[in-house]
Image (cartoon, rainbow, N blue to C red; front, side, top):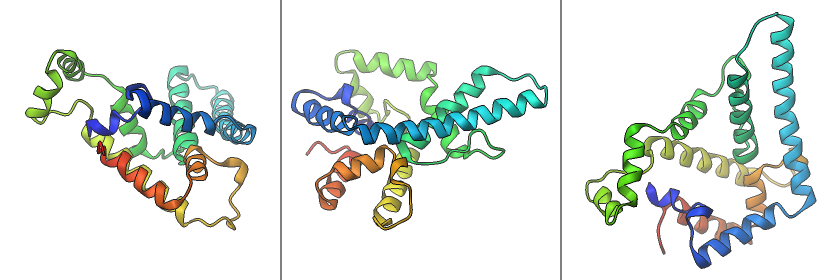
Length: 196
C-alpha cells in the first residue's frame, strides 16, 4: 500500500517527477479543461448555497465548519473522481465520506509511524514487521473507487449524451493518455505500486 502513496508527485524524484509533473501540467494548461472544472465547482457551490438557504428558511443554526467540510468532500468527489458524494443530501455516500475522513485524520499511531519512517532504516523496520505507513483499508477503498470509475468511463462511448463540458480529472487523464493500452498498463503500474 505504501508504494501507491509514494507515487504522488511530491514523493517522486528526478525523471519520475518530471514525467508526472509534465502530464498533470498539460491537463490544466487548456482553457477547456479549466472551464469544465469550474463548471463542476459551480455545481457544488450551488448545492451548498441551496443548503444554506434551506437552513436559513428553517431558522436553524448550523456549524459552518461542517458545511465547508461537506463542500470540500463534494468538490473532491466530483472533480477528482467524477462521483456525486451527495454530502449535502439526506443520505451521503458514507463509504466515500468516512474513508476520506479516516485518511485525513492523524492519530498518535500514525504520527509515531511517520517518525519511525524518517529515522535511519525506519522504513525497513516498518516493512519487516508488516506495518504499513499509510492506512491500508481506506487506501484499498479508494483504489477500488478509481478502478470502478475507470471501468465505467472506458465503457462509456464518445456518443453518450454526457456533458463534455462537465468532464472531471479522470476524464482529462484518459483523454491525455496516448491509448487505452497505455492507460491500462500505467494504471496497473500505479495501482500495484510496482517499481518497474
